[in-house]
Every structure is written in structure tokens, then in C-alpha cells.
Length: 277
Picture 1 (cartoon, rainbow, N blue to C red):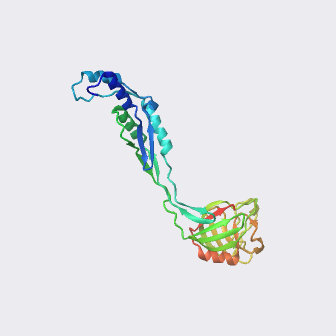
Picture 2: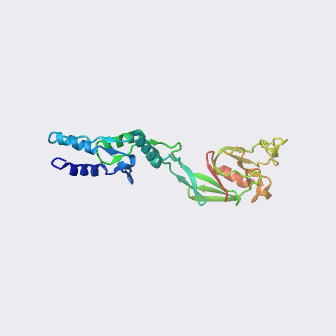
Picture 3: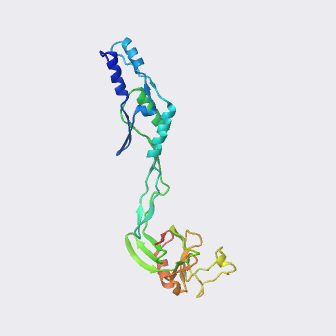
């Protein structure tokens, strides 16, 4: 400001101070903030008085009045706007085909560091872009690779076995009746049993029922593939007439030969996605 009249120097300093702060969020995103939005007030007249008595070439500080609380509040708003929760890798459906959704790293703004950067930029009348600093948060599930997956269409009473993007087989099944619906959601096979025993579940419909050993009268047929949904599984049934209907107490019934084929082609850990359609 050397060589300028005080009024002209004050105008230029005010104009310089009112330039917005620029925040670099990421490669594609920037945000701006005008000092007035924080109530920041530069003591321009005080700086001009100092400059008039300073030696030539001296750097004269520009005092700035600003509420630290308002800066902290603004940093909190930035965090609320640009924080992102981590996303676990998972399976999702594209139509009725399962696809792997990759994991995403989350981020959380370092709010104290952001507040400090704002104060320094205002105090030094510096408008170099401020790159926001984030703490990265990792997802719990990082990979969702699968070789095979089962999709059960509850309303259609169909079971689809997928091998990556290829549909291997489609089966007619029976699902739960209205009062005992097959649960919707994402599950997996957690147990496999040949020639299983049937044990009555803790449900009113099974009151006073006795366990049934393997054999022709077993309601589970010859194969049981238990899901991570409690007391729900895929199994064979001697009641082939129920296939294609909502007839079970929540389980997925298959014709006995179909259940035996499926049992031989899936493993514990195979994802099972049950949808309403």
C-alpha cells in the first residue's frame, strides 16, 4: 500500500479482505465462504494508521475480529455437508441378477484443523485455496465376491441359482403363507444337512409337535440348507402339491430331486437374496 493516500489504501485493503475463502473438498468439489458470512471484521483503519508510521517496506498486520465459535460452527456445517459414511461391499440385484457392489471408503472432516486454517487465512488476509483434511473411515466388509448366489422370488414362488452373471437353473418352490411369510432380505446358507431330523421350532403352530427322524415322512425331505434367518431354510418336501404356492411356515420348499440337486451345487456361505416380486 506504500505511496497511496489513506482512503485509497483502505479501499484496496477492504476489497482484498472481502475476497472469499476457497475450500478444496476433493478433485471435483470446491466451496467458498465470504468473511462477512462469519461476521469477520478487519480493522482496516487501525492498519492504515500503523502503516503511516511504519518504516518503508515493513509488513503491517491486519487485525481481524471474528468469533471462534462461529468458525467452529461453520466447520461443523462443512463436515455435515461433505462427510461420507463408509459403504460395505454387498450384493444387490440388477433386475433379478445379483451384482457385487464395491466397498467405499468414508471420510470425516478434521474440524479443528479446518477452523485453524480459516483463522489463519483471515488473520493473514491470505486467499490461497484451503484443502480440507479428512480422516478416512474403512468399511467393515471390503469385498463382495461371489461365485454363486440364490435369488428367491417370494410372490412368484421361484428360486434362481446364479453363477456370477449366468443363470444356471430356475426352480418352482413353495414359500411362506400369509401368516408365516418367508422373510425378505439378504441372507446366506449357514448349514447343510443330508437326511436331516426335523425339530419343532418355537412357534405356536408347532406346539406339542415331536421331532421327526429321517425318512419318508420327514417334512424336510432329504436335504436341509439352513439360512442365516432364524428357523428358515431351503429344503425338500414330500408334499409336492404345495410347490408353486404360499404354503409353508416360512421356509422355502422344493421338490425332493430339486433340493438334492441344489444341495450338491451350493456351499455354506452362498448368498441368498429373498425379494418380494
